[in-house]
View 1 (cartoon, one colour):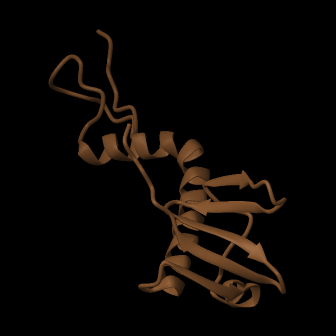
View 2: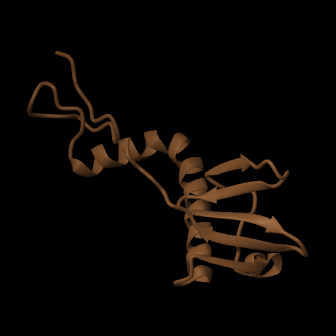
Length: 122
């Protein structure tokens, strides 16, 4: 007779013939371990983007637009290498997007922060 075992802890299984795990803990543990290779970098980048968004949201408060210094953004932990979209503008500056916010460098190491009008109709 073929002995079946749990795919996570390798203990013998009893019960249904198509059973793969001895319980919810082993099933969850197995699938979490499988996903770690892909999800860790994605979670890291998403965490940085969420942090950047939170910083811009906090600085804008209830304003639609504001100019802040690069040093202020750095002090708050803003990571300039992460954004959701970059647009090259005709006047030779780049516009960086972080979800529904946009920012770009102005004169004197200042950044213009603004809300965008996101149209998310798919």
